[in-house]
Image (cartoon, rainbow, N blue to C red; front, top):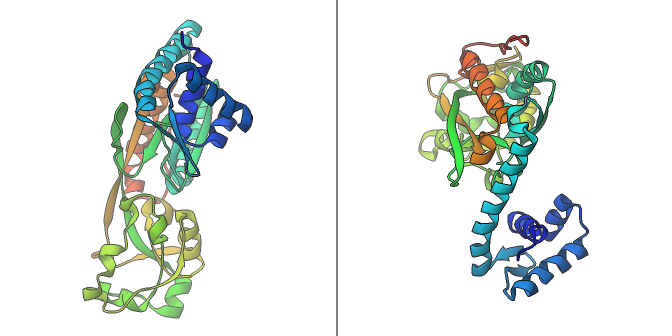
Length: 314
């Protein structure tokens, strides 16, 4: 007979791939978790993990057990939710992962209304400059800039948004305004750190800086993994930056340039694991975000300057 605690430990190590991370999530110390993992392998007389300085990776036998363990965890989760009747209650906790800029400028203000409507729900908002991993149970819901490819997920296109090239009045006063793409080779730019971009959807500047067009290698004054940092640098006149309209258009300190040549449209996707998507509170947030963002299409596409908040009493 398999011990359910052993299965839970196995799952967490398999998902985290690092003993220290798994120990923190399980509330165990590193050495105890290591002993429990080895004892489980001895009980099964099977090696489940390849151990190295890079972490714990599943062996072929471990992969076989993982499929069964995930199914056991899903049934245990659904049984617990059903017995406690939580899946029909508008209460509990939801963890939402979202990209940093969108989470800070759009989602967080909208969630204030959601929390007002549903005071029994606690929201954890993970606004991060990276992709939140639902397979490792980092969140219940995720909003991403590209369509996830993982199996076992419910995925829906959430909204489109537009980006333009922006600069501040202070920058234009010192360096002038570009009037054509070829001028960008002579301007100071702000962008992402190339080797740390977490999605190819963020490589906005690459097609704009074709050497055949700009002629010279572009000069980046500041590069950052954070779009919020890029926005702040643009406000201070450090250079020109490609920014989402929902960030740059909400004030009067930045002005778009080369609108006829620089118009980028991207999408946000909303995703949840199948078992989480069935929970009433998760479905509630999913539907709320879709409705609220549809009402703010003008802001997302650079046609309005203010976020429209839903009525908290509805």
